[in-house]
Length: 240
Ligand code: UDP
Image 1 (spheres, helix red, strand yellow):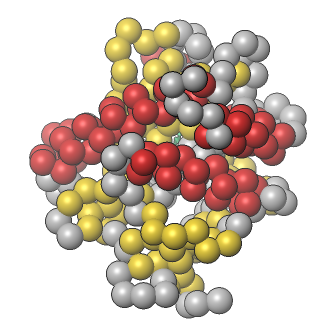
Image 2: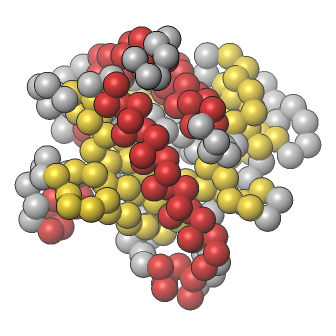
C-alpha cells in the first residue's frame, strides 16, 4: 500500500498514484460523539465506499464538481488532492439530532425553509458551530468561497432529496465538506449514511448512523438497505 499521510476516524489517506491525487481507503471503524463512542463494524468500509461513490457519481452526472477521480477497489478511491476548507456544512430539511435538542423542536418537524449551519472542523475544539462573519473573520474561507459552498450545498440538497425520494427515503439532514483545487471550490469527503440522516418514508425507520449513536439494532442492515434501494433506482431512468 502507498504511504499513509493521515489516518482519520473512518478513512486512511495515502499518497495517490499521480501528482495532485490521493488514495483514500474506507475503514470499518464507526465513531460518534467526537470519537467517544467507537466500534469496528466489519463491512462498513465497503458499504460506505459503495454508497458514497454512487452518490458522488450521480452528483457529477448532474454537473456537481467533486474530488472523485477513480474507484480502485471496494474500499479505495483515487481523489483530487484538494486543500480541505475546515468548515463543515450541515443542511437540514427536517429537525433532528443536535438541532432538535438545541432549539426544542421535535424530531421529524418539517422545517419551513432549508437550514444551513456551519461548524469549525477541529477535533481539538469539538467542531464548534460558527457563523459566516466568524468564518471570514478568522480566515477559514473567503466570502466568495463561502457563497460558493452555500450555493453548491443547496443544489446538492435538491439533487439528493429527489434521488432519495425515489428510494422512498427522506433526506432529513446531511453534512458536506469542500476543498480548494486550482482556486475553486469542489465537493470532497464522502456522502454516506455516516454523514446523512435517512428515514424510511413509510415507517420512519432510521437507516443511518443514528442506529449506531442510539443503539437501534443492526447498524449495517440499514446501510445495506440504502444501498439496495439506491442500486434499484440508479438502474431505472429518472423520469419513471
Ligand atoms: N454530521 C456529520 N459529522 C459531524 C456532525 C454531523 O456527518 O461531525 C451529520 C450528521 O450525521 C447529521 C447532520 O450532520 O446527518 C446533522 O448533525 P447534527 O448537528 O444533528 O449532529 P448530532 O448533534 O446529532 O451529532
